[in-house]
Length: 242
Image (cartoon, rainbow, N blue to C red; front, side, top):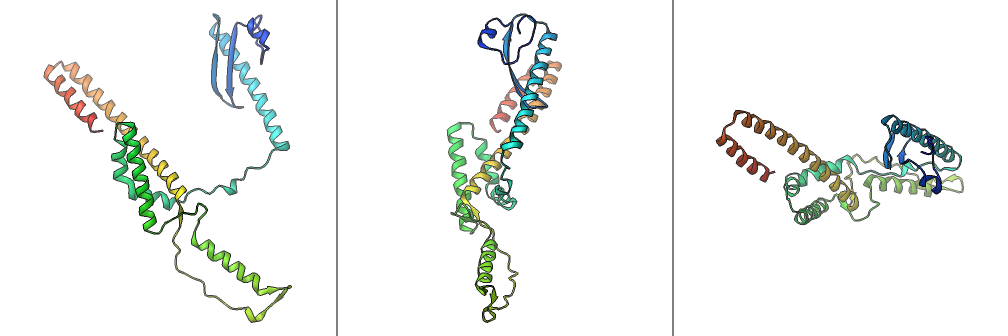
């Protein structure tokens, strides 16, 4: 801000004389980050500065949208192949209880080793059950049958004519195909499941902590010394088991 006027994207010389240096990041509809320092300014001036910065950010976002529409490429959303829901169920069934115990390890390095060992165990069990393929591009076995079927159809037609000698009817297989998962997908799902269990654990600990604080304040209000000591001992035992 120079001479009580807001300057967007000032030069180095202008910044030396500015009463306010403000850096902002955001979108066309929201402010994500504000950093800076200033002389003594009123709250009204600071709010005006933020509003001015938001207007400038909105114009930049509009220019970026125009650039994307002019020369941008469409995102290849079709190429995104997320792990199937069945894999999440397998990983949770195998690692459930052991994962909870591993996440309760307080030391960082032992906890990492336990999670890594459990991850390898999950991969080994799924491999023994025939669910895991070492090929990262593996998919349902049914896809392979479709490819073979297409190749057979190509061999039947030659030079635009149907070779009736090779035409035959195949029965449609009703046998369900087992889904194959890549080892990369298993590791990805294991990390997601671990994060979900960890978030759930954090919520549980926070709820218990709030309950303990409420009980503690109630005991302090009563003023019993023996209850106070007993509560502190019980709390320490409770947290040691979390």
